[in-house]
Image (tube, rainbow, N blue to C red; front, side, top):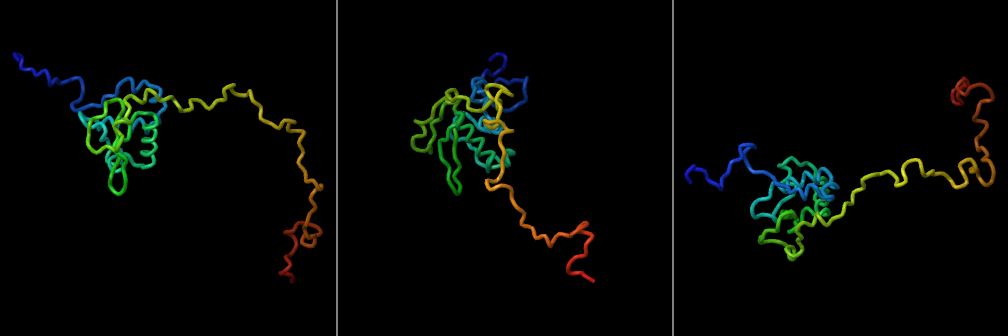
Length: 196
């Protein structure tokens, strides 16, 4: 080229150097994304960070891998993975097992890459853009549908009409009257064992 520029290597001077994560607006604007927990959204970014030219289906979310990325709780990772799978954002291509086989995942906003080692039937079961078909399941409000103060919770025959008493009448005391002082406060009386 006459000007010495390579059209394949454009340098964007308007941002910092290095790769970047691209999440389509269709992912960020769908109802399934708005119902995700914050850990699930963070884990989605971890998956997007790993995504390269031909590795969709071999993405990792193991505790050993994510520990290096700042994740500290295996329970949080497990819940976030489950949320992403249920919402249709990731798909498990290989089921991990002990002692040292990690599960592999694919994001569903990209096509599944042809890779060796997938579990049987994983390629057929993968569904592109499955997050678009998932309905929003998170409860948006804990307010009753009729609003506040519309439902009164009390016994059907009102609170004042219910009297609770034993069927045989009042309970009689079983106290030994000899243990109580005849007059005065019990602290004024000498104890039985210290009579002088």
